[in-house]
Length: 170
Image 1 (tube, rainbow, N blue to C red):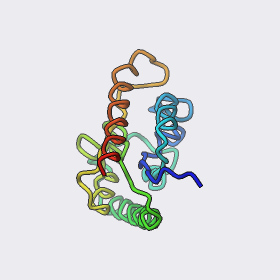
Image 2 (cartoon, helix red, strand yellow):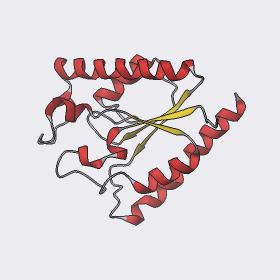
Image 3 (cartoon, rainbow, N blue to C red):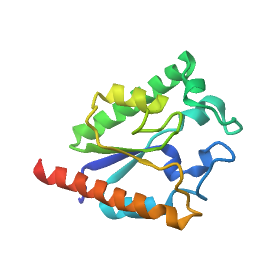
Image 4 (tube, rainbow, N blue to C red):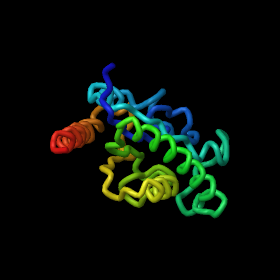
């Protein structure tokens, strides 16, 4: 059986823009250009849950990180992070490693690189791996604006190559 034994944790909306608060979706479904590169990389994808949708539903209004940073929301994010940590531990028992985390720049919940969103901050704490390689899809990148993809796709290719290089060293 062929297994790469590597997975990338991916913010829910990278694969499913339908969960994004109206009117902020930037792709019809998932970010196709990103998904194409990830598929070619041979890294398995673990789609994280969308805590914002689970917390406030599909009809929610746009909110800031500070508005989401409440005890109730942190409790939900902690429960979700714990569930995913358990799943990842099971993968680890089968010699599958988490090699990185992909988020959405300036998301109140799922920014992985800048000021981490509430969910990502809690997830990283639960996973206990501050050194996990992270990348965000930039705020200005949309499927409708092909020119905006160039610099990000170059960065993504370098990032994926670095993940491959790190695997070769181990």
